[in-house]
Length: 269
Ligand SMILES: Nc1ncnc2c1ncn2[C@@H]1O[C@H](COP(=O)(O)OP(=O)(O)OP(=O)(O)O)[C@@H](O)[C@H]1O
Ligand SMILES: Cc1ncc(CO)c(N)n1
Image (tube, rainbow, N blue to C red; front, side, top):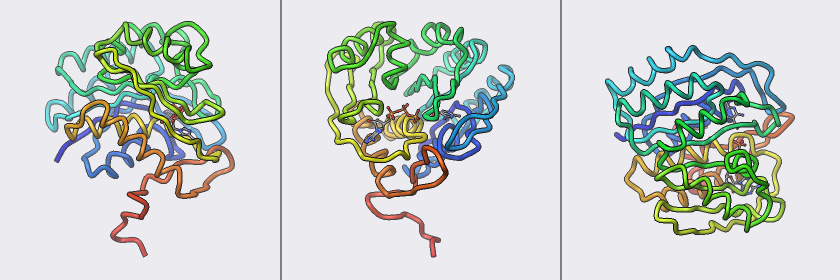
């Protein structure tokens, strides 16, 4: 069985972070492993508390996983401090990890900040160069490239600027657009493709980015090309957004148990 390691924060409300990743990886039929970077107390309305995990314990989790059940792909999500970022990069290099998907998480859907301002430089220096695919949303792309990212032309320039720091691909996600949900993919050979999609009219978008990035990691673990993995992942998120699940009082979570238009729950009543 193929395995995927999620290095990310815990979301107590279950819709984002480590929890979204495990649900996604299981929906792909793969085996999920985890290295928790932070524990957040949050729900669909906001983040109430964050406790970072000691960097030595983050490193120990990564070592324990690689030295036993070696993952076929790695997804990196919330990494809130420069020290944690540095140990993750160091351990992934030491284990010669491949198929690394970096979701440069900065702000939750609810608007709360999830990374220290000083840690952004460390993310660019240590993790961006290791990534097979980087998946910023538009505000994150703006922080990574340093200029406003508001229209198609700026999205294109931002993706190309971010791609300068990596041998991998860059996917700029369109969840923050008002008109469409088009994403832009720049492949390592510099070729550009727009992944066009109609917007789904819903407030329930908590964890869309976490779900997308772990789904891309699953596709890479299964041997998909980057473009195939990204297109399948976008379809998976779309399906998980479309079931009409409406939980919580804020931006609700996705339904990860969606599978090709029908539930895949053998024990469901
Ligand atoms: N309303 C929507 N309709 C269709 N697709 C959407 C919608 N919102 C987001 N998506 C898609 O979901 C994926 C994740 O994009 P998004 O920009 O929401 O990530 P994000 O901001 O990192 O998410 P989060 O911080 O909530 O985890 C992208 O492929 C995007 O196009
Ligand atoms: C733990 C965690 N990671 C990522 C996100 C971004 O959606 C979130 N809200 N919480």
